[in-house]
Image 1 (cartoon, one colour):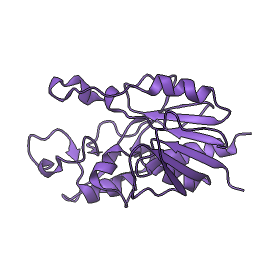
Image 2 (tube, helix red, strand yellow):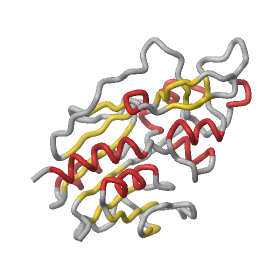
Image 3 (tube, helix red, strand yellow):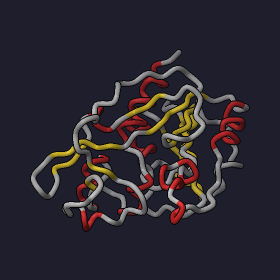
Image 4 (cartoon, helix red, strand yellow):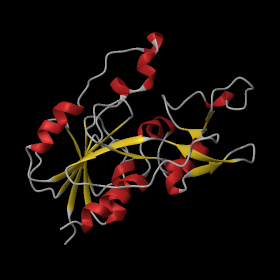
Length: 219
């Protein structure tokens, strides 16, 4: 019988796909409809109050905008919920193993940092250059998890971020980094089914598969 995982704030299922590959049966929960969700089942509900019983492993990717670099730019600053600390309290009160994912800058405790280049992720770009994926994410877990070091320093990366737009000027001389178009972003993340806006919020399935397999192997 497959272990059951719950993917809170699942979006279209980037983390879900990796957990499925690790061997979990995955139920996704999101407050918005997710017509392209790839998991075994989906529930439209508030992830902060969803019942956690009956799940062996809980994955949670709460909104990251409040902690992201863009919030340091006054013209882009908005009010976003800061849910990591409250979510941790909820998960620690459950009987399940769990993992919280978020961006650098989030208040994570002793997190593991994963990098796309460490998993060989990247894309063959329109100018003929293959660029590794820059998508650093933090992971805090109820169990000790380990992972490879970052391998993207010192080389130009492909970025998938923001609202998914802005890639039209990626060849401009004054551009700040290379931002992938839709097809490049899908290749870089290993996610062929998402829209550009969904891609900008997703993590590569390789990350959650890597962590999910470690959880699976723990006694």
